[in-house]
Image (cartoon, rainbow, N blue to C red; front, side, top):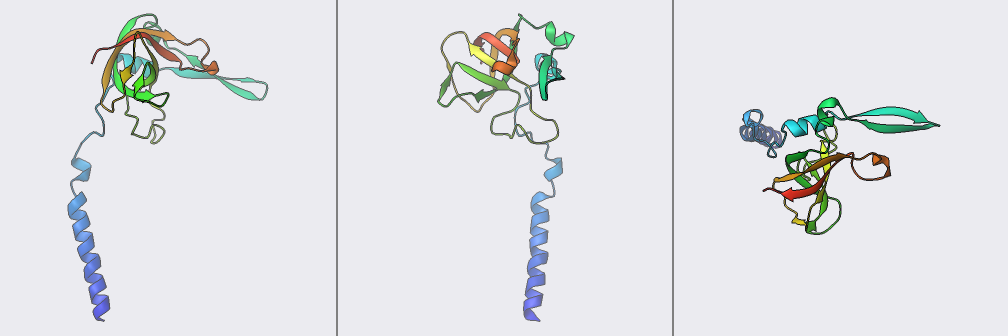
Length: 160
């Protein structure tokens, strides 16, 4: 009987402590990263894929909506997080994402976040988990199935 009483008290106490620790959790509104979306990212996020079939294979071809096409060959500023394509500290080519690499990019209901491939104008930049801002010329890759991203920034420079 004493054991049962002890177990019940332990369970009750554990529940009370747990509730005390998480009672404000839904109302904390603490972001897990700095939001990066701006008008340019919003346009990039609208890129879709046309699906066709060649033989018994599905082929995904990027479709660039008019508001994104307006940015082609234009200099744009993009804030974001570095997603390295190779190992090492310094990178002259990398992906830029609206989400940090530490956050699972394939989880949740919204799919893969928008990303662009960046080619630095000169030199390389050191990897950081902090957000950066890049300025470069936006181009569309005509054959992304042969490698590289659909949207790329060339002659990119670090703004901050």
